[in-house]
Image 1 (tube, helix red, strand yellow):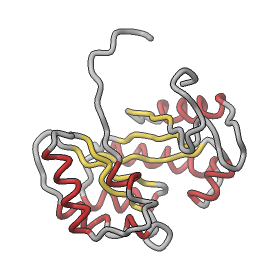
Image 2 (tube, one colour):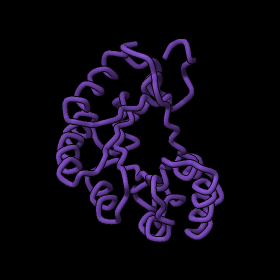
Image 3 (tube, helix red, strand yellow):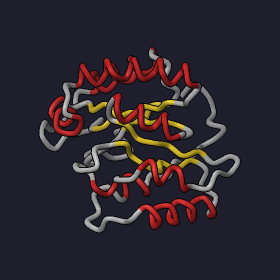
Image 4 (tube, one colour):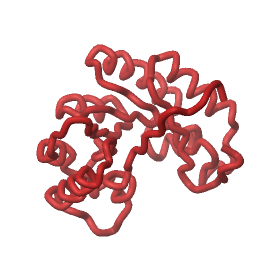
Length: 189
């Protein structure tokens, strides 16, 4: 480590990651109430919505309506997850405070999750990073399947490092390594 950690920020992902695979689909009003309660509890960074295809992920339908209804409070940042250019455009148009873009370290998972080769997803990331910088919108990157893949098994750490380097070179301000399938332990991270 290059220095002492002076601050840790929690990013609550429950309204997005916690709900996206739940069999019960919550309406916009219920999702807004859930996020508002998180804000009332003191959470300041919340991945509130995902700009994905509503047919593929019905639990995330209505992202624009959720964003429009959320209470705006000083110091609270609402993050929108994006998987492609169209999702980023939607996020930008509805006023997210931050965007989170995803690239999967596993080629197979990237194809199944994003419907595109990893190289194409990375190329899109570079363009999105430029657009985010121009819009002064903070952009983070999540490297999904960073520690393992349900289709390919172990993931080569060199691939994860390459994705992270490309993101950093593109000006991405925050890079998260996601243990998408729970394949690792704290000591391996």
